Length: 582
Image (cartoon, rainbow, N blue to C red; front, side, top):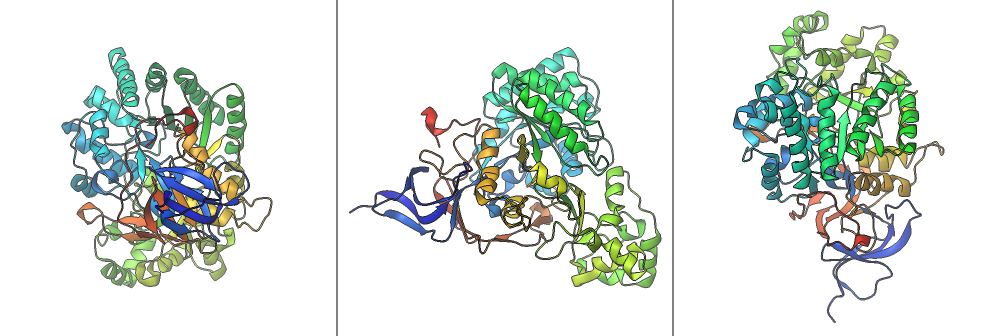
């Protein structure tokens, strides 16, 4: 008798993404969608034994920067190694389209400064076979991938495309230019962009220290993009605001975007060390805004937003000192040997850092908040475990202890600086409330960017281990709640109603997870980008199988070789609408 289904996942504990209690069931897959859930008779052409395993929908990461990586690779790691089956890129107003040939160098410098992607990597890796944003979508649509990916229109390239050198020089647009930005925004949504994005955050600078073009733009320019969404009646708006502004001022601006666009808006929300309780005020304002009828969500990370430092990475407390620059490009072993010299050690410890970018100077100077990350990585250390606390206990200067820590493990030690969401004894007081607030959504993983300083794309595994196993029952999150946060909620937030749940008719993006083996490894640098560029990678154990459109892409962390992932053009209705899905 021929098999009844293409694939059956047998006997797993289904955590369906809807937030309800898990239940034991089989899951059948046919033609790339889930065809049945329950006790399924007959056989499948292929079957997966999921006894004692969790069966979840694939996770959806709505805040990534794979805009460049998708043009030179077919795997969107590290996200695809953590149960993620759909990513949304083009966030924070940065990307590679639209772009005229004369602007390629500018956009490369933009991504180098804002997203820590080495210039040589982009110069060697990005093919630039497009000019307009629709042409960019056509180019990446031809790219098979391990997971699905969706794009958004970024403000900075759009501004330069419309205004030329005046846009790069941060001059104000005229009425004609504002109208063209509005029309091109609507055009991008019409051909498949999920939304439009911008940044107004002063942290976003070129490597030379200047602000990127969108940061200081007037409100009417941002509202022109929002009006483009209103014109076409589709799309979402994502933004990173200026965190030094009072929460009320930020929310007033965000509400103006929501009112003008008539569309969902999301923004970066974190506990800022410079405004310890500002996030509480923002949550209260967010509650009021949604009660008034606006669809506004704060994007939050379920752990401290962490900067990673090391001799193989982009930054550490000595990296911006003149004496270090003389050895910065040496192989690691030679660098470690050079730093063993007592004279160089003395100079590095006493010299002042020098750099045109004040943000890098600030990060490199935060010696009171440095920790050894360890393996398994500890993202929630006790304050007393800091290197500064160790130095006080030892009666030594912090820079002496930091110097020794960087040289540990033959120079491969990674130090951790929790830059935001670091309130509380174990840096989780803000996070515990932010992730459960009614109008927040998980994001900010930043996969595909910050190759040498951040590796937060592993947050799904972190949520599924740290928060589901939290020792405090009041803070512990159930698997059902965690999967909803990782799958259905982000999918719906960007209009992807065809995924994020285990139910008949939904897209067959599925994880089979061994909860007893689920473990997050420490990030490690690899030098496998174009031009030999470096990136941080992070792996996990416990993902027994990951499926995209019903095709097994990974088994126990090993790639199957299948590349069923494709560009997702535009919003997707759920199965109840009767729309054909792919």
